[in-house]
Length: 86
Image (cartoon, rainbow, N blue to C red; front, side, top):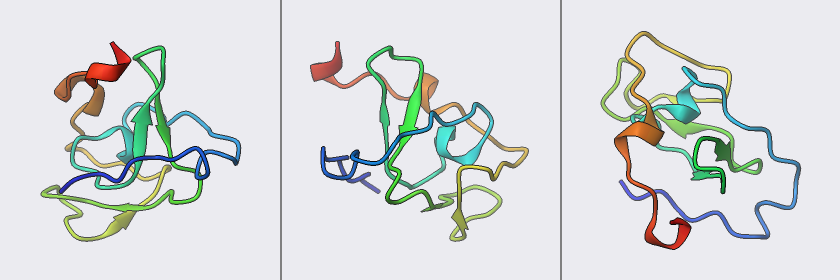
């Protein structure tokens, strides 16, 4: 599943960094997020905070920024940085 890009319009609301171990920082979370410029912080789209669990124990269920489970996989470690971010 391809994660939609976060546009400047969708970033107009304040963005709270996602917490390590929570669904938005998991490789299996299908919501919209971006890697912050520092390379170590994930920013979920504030307009679309929920996303489906993909292939995890909550597969197919919408999960939000406060949800977590015992099968978390670090999205930042599992995905190389985009070419335009260095």
